[in-house]
Length: 323
Ligand SMILES: NC(=O)c1ccc[n+]([C@@H]2O[C@H](COP(=O)([O-])OP(=O)(O)OC[C@H]3O[C@@H](n4cnc5c(N)ncnc54)[C@H](O)[C@@H]3O)[C@@H](O)[C@H]2O)c1
View 1 (cartoon, helix red, strand yellow):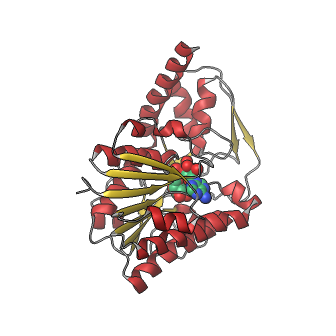
View 2 (cartoon, helix red, strand yellow):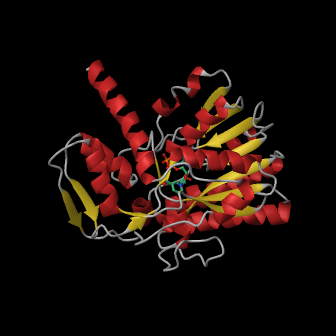
């Protein structure tokens, strides 16, 4: 159904955006990638750039006029560009708001003026905050802790509002702790990306808190599948739903398995103080995505990690051959 569609992907050079771009090109879509390269990398788009159906523009979602122009004749928008770091949003809440809220409004207005058929938005489980109810489901009260979570909540509400008042076909997907190939290994990245790099280098691991905190780690391929299903679904119009593996695992358990699977010896796990804005437990109910989209996660944290580890080892060995 996406074959021949003209698709605009914001955040295309990022972790999720670049994986999505490749999947869309594989389906025969024409993809216009848009990213200011703040956190994204052109190397993530190496495969896409070999495809004549791909065009890339370096630009900012805060630049409304540019978006208005580039989104001409676009059928579908996947809005993935964002200020993505929770700790940095605590340091720079205003910038986070400009990118994640005002930037999203720019996307919505450009989509409305250009008669875009569908917008799929990358929301986040952070909008639930640290509420005790588990699993987190879409009818729950939203109680975000960090400025990042607040901005995601506001942007998601704008998506729903634009559906209600202008009839735009918007769908927001609340991702839970996504991991997998091309995730950046930086202090602001997800824990799996940081730990996999350290484990392969034989370095010790630092867990913030006692490690009993749990997360619903979702493999990137499942997230991409959820996005494609949402773009193709008529029933998803105006809806908000969780996209998760649906299976929580504690950080202590996961790190133990990661070290075992890597085959590395002598790696120690150290514990530091808990980080402000971090939540204790998170785990998503995916009943709604299953009902509306027919979504089912094919991976859990361990099977996803095994695939990610193989990918990482291949990169490592080809880099060391280059040296
Ligand atoms: N990774 C996760 O676990 C997770 C969980 C929930 C939600 N999300 C959401 O999914 C989306 C993609 O996240 P990701 O993990 O791929 O992060 P990422 O940082 O790799 O990708 C975000 C991309 O947006 C770009 N960007 C940032 N500011 C921009 C701006 N002003 N204009 C244009 N481009 C800009 C960055 O350069 C980057 O390439 C984000 O909206 C994020 O909030 C991610």
